[in-house]
Length: 131
Image (cartoon, rainbow, N blue to C red; front, side):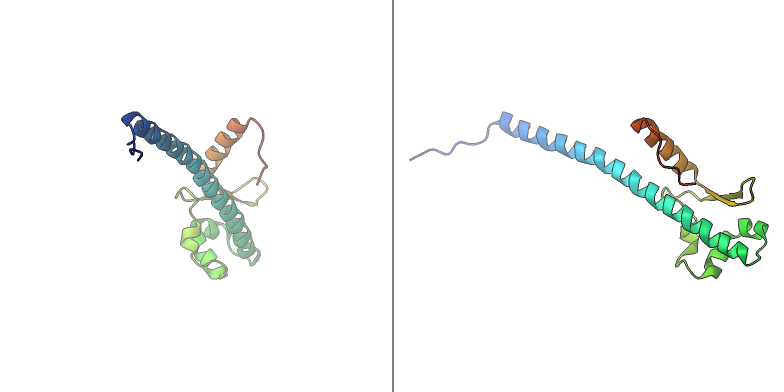
């Protein structure tokens, strides 16, 4: 009859080390995925906000009123369910609205632009320009 052999302390320590190593790699990769998701949400929200507010401007709305109370006009458009939440980027910062030199609406997020610069620097090449 064979005698059962227990695990040695060294074997248990190696297994725990490997589990920790795999967990840390997965955690590191998840952070990148979360930032990608936040960047995607922000990019899509910027596009939607700009399009909806430009439609409202086409109705003859005063541009200054639009900059002061964008949530009011997003709600009036009836396209967005929660307009007050849409005015925040993926990192929870409020979008900055302004007009550029040509007179078109600009929706800006500091966190998105810094994330995009970091991502560009890491990849060493230009990303697609979304505005």
